[in-house]
Structure formats: structure tokens, C-alpha cells
Amino acid sequence: MPQDTLRISVLAVRRPPVTKWGKGELRPCAVLAQEPQAAANSLLFAENGVETWYLGGRDLVLYSGDTSHHRDNLTSGRPSVWVALRGQDPETAQVIAVTADPYEGEGYASDLELRVEAVPMPPVLVDHIAGFIAAHHVDMPFKKRKRLPVDPNAMAARAPRVLQEADKWVQPQRKR
Image (cartoon, rainbow, N blue to C red; front, side, top):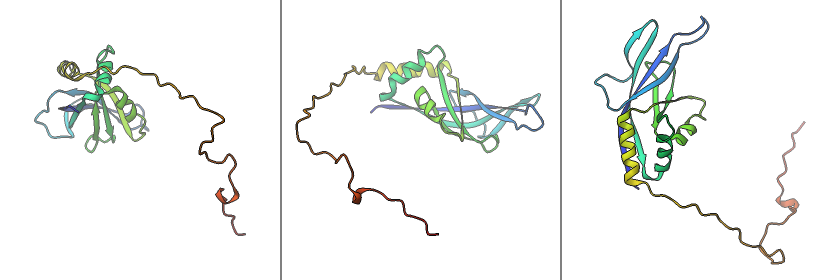
């Protein structure tokens, strides 16, 4: 299965808390098509309490089997890269994954420990992914499966409809 790996960088914004009881919020805001010369988890810019952090680079892997998913992403009107982030402290936050597959990004969003954001995809990545789709996409025709007719009078090996006492699970009783 052909695949392509791109190294991209993740930027995040940390905003101050809204109330004195709240915590600051770290959210992925952008990806860069190349890695800067800065160290991971370093502060790039701060103004009025809003900080921009470079969280590090990650590999964005494109698989030829997912080209229809990538095509859905590019034709959506807002091509995005999904960034999964663990932690709210910018000095220790980890970028867990980056993906251009919207369905994989949705899967990451089900993990309650991760902060998942869809950030805009840079035009360089859009062009690269479009080229990958053009080179490796294969349309898979839809085939509706048909059920096989079943003869109700045929004697097939089946499980018994009523379990025997030896096959039942019995919850042990507590001693009083």
C-alpha cells in the first residue's frame, strides 16, 4: 500500500482564563508545512496575555487506502488538519497525532483526555494531498450483498434455543 509522510509543525494559542476561578486554555490554532528552528514547546509570541506556542513537529501520513477520505476533506470547502493534543500546560503539552483524514479526526475526538481541533490546511499541503489523491486513488464500486435464501426445514447445526442448567452462568451467592 503506497503511503507518503509529511513532516508538519503545530502551533497553539494559550488564552488567559475568563474568570479568576478558571484555567487558561491551550488550543491548536495552525499547522506549518515545515519545521522552524525553534525547540518544541517554546513560546513564540505573547501579547495582552495571549501566547502563541510552538508545540513541535509530527508526521502526517497519507495512505492510499484513505484517498476517498482525503478527497472528502479537500472538497468540503474548508480543508483541515486535525490535531490531537494532550495537556493544557504549554511547556509539557504533547501533540499526539495529526491527520488529514476527517473520519480519523472524529475518532480522536471521542477520547476525553485529548483536545482535538480542526485547523486550516495550508495551501502547500492542499496541493500535495491533491497530487497524492490523483496518483493513488482507485474508485471502489459499491456492491450490495444479497442474502442467501434459508431453508427453514433444513437441519443445520445451531445452538439450542434454551440453555441447559449446566450451560447457564450462576452468580455466586454471598455468605451472610
